[in-house]
Length: 141
Image 1 (cartoon, one colour):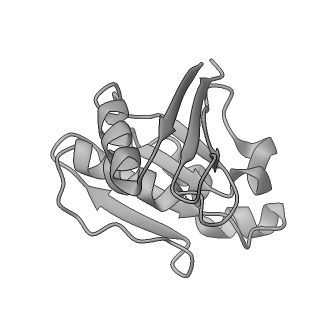
Image 2: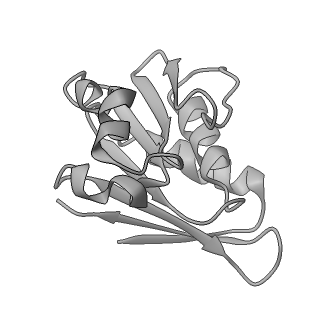
């Protein structure tokens, strides 16, 4: 388990960029954390760390955003509105698992039973002040 305390969104992005250097492709990364904890900020840093200048945004309304980077393809899911297996199937989630891409999943708690055993958990929680975040990374493999 890795733990990092970020004091700003910029530090969160820098940490995520460093984390991205260890990705090989095919990883499923499940975010845990309430609204406003920095899940999209972490994604922005990860995508930039993979060498892309893409504008990263929350996939709230699109359900999934794709980012092609020089190293890997990244699919960024928002499972906030997923409440059933039928909803999950309609996102095409299972089709993405075998693409070799990195899958980033916000609101992963809603699809807990569908996550692979090798899922990496990234938990973001409030620190001691408004800008501070505690980021914990747990590899379940």
